[in-house]
Amino acid sequence: MALIEIEEAARRLARAIASDLSLYNAEKIEKGVAADTLFDELAGDIEEGRALYNSRVSPELYPKNFYDRAIVDLLIRGKGHVRSKMW
Image (cartoon, rainbow, N blue to C red; front, side):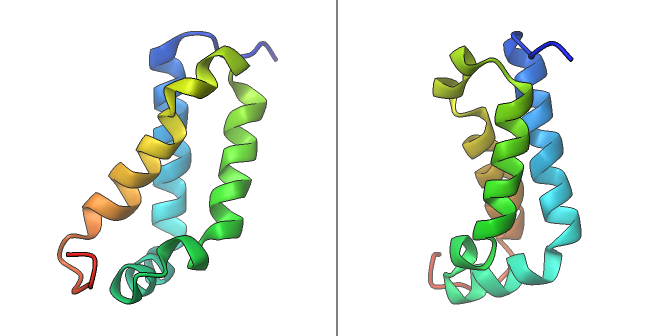
């Protein structure tokens, strides 16, 4: 399979991976947001997703941080309703 070299396609892949993390780890995410331990709670899952992303995307796109942005957008911003020390 050829590596993704188009920014929009890389962005979509990153969001799809982050969306799956959000879907399958909703309870962990809420717990992590509430206790301000989100990245500890999901460290393994986030790194597994990053490995998948990196295996499918051209290394030239890594500095664009599409995966990290997708994690913030889908795992954190969507949980604004959860009481947390973060906000």
